[in-house]
Length: 496
Image 1 (spheres, rainbow, N blue to C red):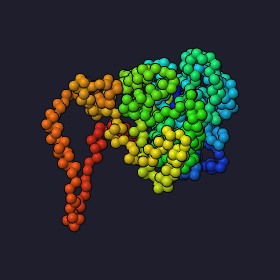
Image 2 (cartoon, rainbow, N blue to C red):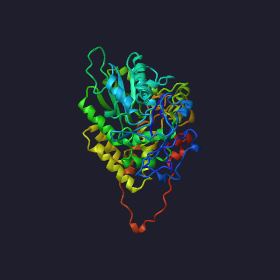
Image 3 (cartoon, rainbow, N blue to C red):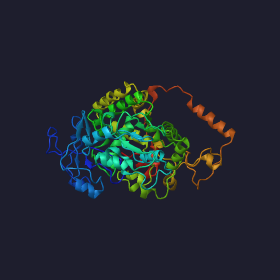
Image 4 (cartoon, helix red, strand yellow):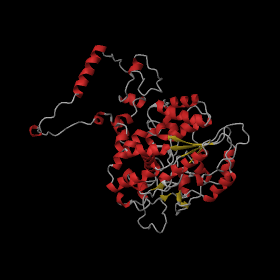
């Protein structure tokens, strides 16, 4: 099983996460099928076949089919190829350790280079970061993501070919990698910047609440154009919690290994919270992106401008996003550009509730890897994750309260300050809707507000409970608030 968040032409072979029942785990063999013809793919008869003791087996597309579908032409694929094992970790079938070693020995990062490392795919966030690093002003621009940006995939086409192509690029360069430090496809640790003319190369390590990370990976596996996995999110949680997920390194150890590197080389490696970048609150996104900009010696003003542009979806965005090979249909169709943290946390907790007690125990045990790490950031993320459903935002706050899609459906929430002309934020940076067409509301008088507050305080006063013998229990019938939401809002909120 493999994944990449690639632009057209730099992708990973299509993989389908289902076991071929004719092949045992011990044989280590894999059958080739076209994942885009799902009816022809070998499938499990039930989700129970994805047991905790086994890797969900994968099948992938032959090279000829990949070329026809637009996936990484030129990468060497065969019809039967296992995951690549290196230092006890697993890597995608396209991974060529010999090519990686050439890069590790010969390719040195130049001044201004930025490497973004994460164990999870990024879609809209990749667009935002490319624009930040390479000087763009529009994260929605057609053709913004290029094959050269995705280091692991492109390096497998041939190390020297990649180096020649990378050398042609002017200015600061952005590269995305999933690698652990020992497999990082570049001369590392970085050599001292001898020229001193520009910023030294930097590594931005994206971490997040593990619930957000797992849901992001599972969403990519199941709902992007690159369809790699057919199990439910509950199945995927069980697989990760059991410690069997070792693609690009064991799931929890991946972040721990980079946290150690950041502690040793803080001048060019830092960890940042991708969960904050996935907030629906523009101010929170701006705060974290400005932290990244400070680390990369980029003016904060550029970060603020890009965040404003991110929350301002242009008319032709769907056409541009549809050209990204592994974009999500929901984003193309009008969803928020950045991966939404709150929605993913709710999806994870709902799926975990459906898991067996053993999975809950395994999950809390697995989180201890971060809790006992030396990174205060990972410790904090793990402790929040351990709180479960109580640490997730209300469902209503996981739905965008502005944007043309919400506004036209009548599901937005108007900014009462904008209606009075006194909102301190721009339309892009406000959490609420500034679009035309809302009726101006009249604020209640001070006397009426005091009456309401007194009534609320009175209702909070504790009254004596009646005698249990005199209480007649009646069935409690309530109507969940989300049943009144528009259908598209409900579908988005409950995605996964």
